[in-house]
Length: 164
DNA sequence: GCCAACGTTGGC
DNA sequence: GCCAACGTTGGC
Image (cartoon, rainbow, N blue to C red):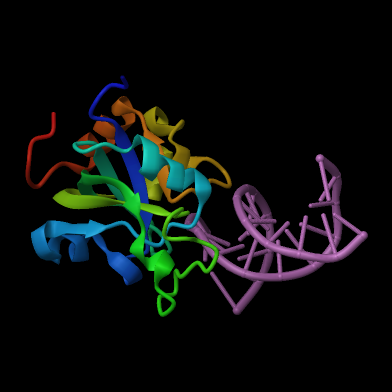
């Protein structure tokens, strides 16, 4: 069995769903719907477990970077948007008895005291191996090593819970 | 808004 | 099963 908790990074465009919106959601929780990439799907379906911790990354914004920490509170289940013809994530090829896309439920834990921008991550040699700074890396769900996770928290500082 | 990088699709 | 065309991501 893999060590727990495991650590992840999840990308969201703040114009679509920001960390502040996650905090404002009922129970500070949402389902991570709309992912349509098989590698990311596999991680959500098979690998992410309750209690795993997530760096919440804001993409397509200025500057991109990590805004807060979230945790997995519900494990992989079919993404309801794939079956909804009115949803932009509708997938006509997915069948109810053989769903193609999965989600996890995530809950806000604490914002970082200071936003850790992509430039900050790049400037920190300890984080040179993080997937998010690799050229051409587009995956919206990425595994993160525990040392990298702790370093990002050290850089940003925690407003709330102690996660050490 | 541009465009490089990458994933997916579909004709063959 | 190859690969060109196309769509998407996401930094800049």
